[in-house]
Image (cartoon, rainbow, N blue to C red; front, top):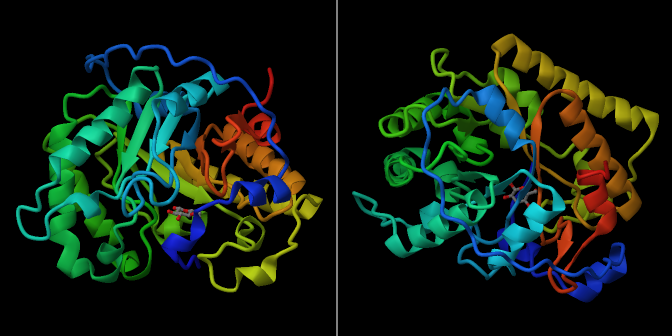
Length: 356
Ligand code: BGC
């Protein structure tokens, strides 16, 4: 089980990064071309399988808009980040968002228009570069702790997001909630239907990303119940197995210091990953749903060579099973990019986007 202790994670000391990870290669950042206007939605079926294939290889632009305030976790989204991600060969970005921090506490729970402008800007940076973009509700901790008290607010937030983006192109996807867990586990199958109903009032055919309980764990997929007749759904799972390897030394996970030194890469390690992906693929086939591995990554305290090996293996497993994916994450403590050096960690990038 993941125990989140949010603030401690992030403020990465560059010297520490350089010391414990491979030193990034300084690289020239390509000049940011002027963004082209966002195309408007076009008619079509918006088939979720076709769109999932286009989601392809993605990356989470994380620790920015899902922080208590953008910047306090060390990341402020910049226009050039979108170009850097595009130039590296990614097809899509996932942008975690703490909408709950920008909504009134009382009905009608109005979302801050200035924050909407900020998210519009981010969404348009991706779309105008021909990248798909997934936005979600992330870090709504009170909903997890007090679901009954926060359900109406959660649904009202979705009503506003859905209405606001209803005319945006299909390449914008909504994800109902990052990693439902804890008290939400028993309520999730009902809550997701209610949220979907709200979204469908204004977005009848937008593909909506939904994952299982227990932090979107692959093992919880059999618990997920989706409305049969809604086919504009892409199912997401997060993959951090084996957890003692990917989260060794993670400050927000209790006792994770005991896992320091956990290695990865034996034949048995690989077979365990294959078995997980086979199970997910069997579920997907039986339920006729496409799968998006919306987060996977190993924290920087793991051995760098093992991280690279694991990242490559997981990404290729997902692809071999016809799944799209988004690496967790761009430039923080799991990061594949170092903003101070202005460079990718070439070994991690090579694992994500192998040379042709
Ligand atoms: C959480 C992050 C965490 C990551 C890996 C994400 O869903 O929001 O805080 O670093 O999972 O554990």
